[in-house]
Image (cartoon, rainbow, N blue to C red):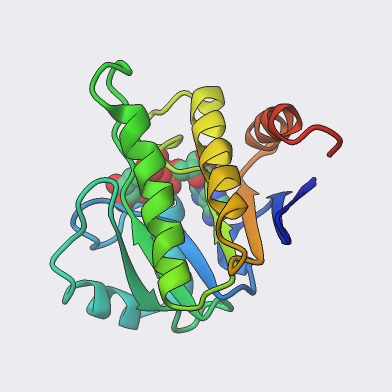
Length: 179
Ligand code: APR
């Protein structure tokens, strides 16, 4: 599914983020930046040990912020590591922190001329964010960013599993009529 915005494309696909041949993939990391499971584990396995060695020099990453490394053995040139919020009850600033994780990742891409990006559904796995709410925050944040940042050519959400993909498609259809 695709949505054209201000000369850029917001795209939804079902698949594995490590397979994406783009300028940068976004990693759903934890504050240590020293790897984990889910997206984080898959990216570190595919990128190889140099990624962990590089991450170990970065001093971690605060929730809602983002840091950049090369992609090493990944088809993607670079990895933007960001940390989403752990979902508690929606009353602890989770929505703002999730939006900020996407905004920080996009801003870092703009700063470094990374025009084609692949993103996961941040915080909706181990961190427990309710999928539909997270999808709405993710997609509305990216739509808003693309509207004022023509330097970003492609934002591809890579969804793991049919439920995630269907939910993101339903939310994008609401945000981008005529898709
Ligand atoms: N490609 C795309 N999406 C994936 C992949 C993959 N290879 N693996 C998992 N996902 C999906 C999950 O199904 C979920 O919808 O990505 C979404 C995010 O899940 P997590 O990777 O668990 O990330 P998150 O919920 O942000 O939790 C981050 O998990 O792996 C640890 O070190 C990480 O502590 C951090 C925490």
